[in-house]
Image 1 (cartoon, rainbow, N blue to C red):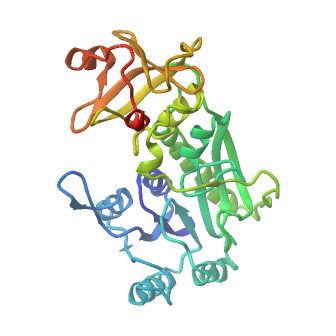
Image 2: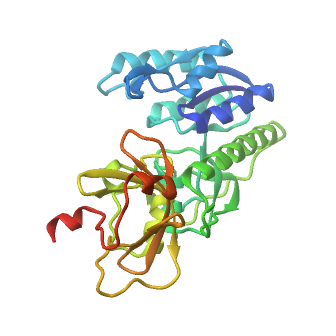
Length: 338
């Protein structure tokens, strides 16, 4: 079996690490991000990858940076020593969160020349070159893409620009109340990525792999998501808003305002037909047990599930018992400037 270094941080990566371990690969070293404060109490929390490494007594490093000339040169130097001492045949990277400097790529490439010749390989949740970068699942759902997938990529110095060793697509379902969210696709893609990387590593032990350079056309970038952009702009079309709500589920959560209160919107679908022309975007058209219908820049959106700050998610019928929304109520901060 190949001897591996694994670099990753969140649950998406932990799924692959579990699969590699279960298939008997020798995990010589795990790299993951330092513990971070999280939750309401802001207590220090280990990553999902660290939890698995600790449970299985796998050597672990948590450098703040891998740049030898950066802010944390001591961390990088210690990580370099650990990587070289691991004498691994390849490094598998999945949602690590740190950029691999050239010295890491060179070290793994030099090490792997006499073995599988893989160097550093990355599990990426998109169909490259579509959605290179930090948030490919969010951006695919937000853009209304018909499909997404996983690429196993041979890493180079560019941002997700390396040759593709294997890929597989899955559809994105956009219709109906149970349409795909980022959260649902994340789980499916994490499982798919784990399967594909095992296949690639198994195949690499049998002989050279066919690495396909990425096409020059169709390149797009998936910027990291921030909370501010998750605010709903009711001037957009109902279709666009619906995609954004699902793209930001579960994090950071699409949100709007109702007066001084912030509301997160979780489940919503475009409503057939158009709102009355004299009602501004963000206006409540109707609100009952079947949902809250809101006028958009084009079309209308029926909200099925929402959440007050500090409370739990509620179906519209439960929400409206505590807070009726008369027809004409305005949602969104645009209402404040009218």
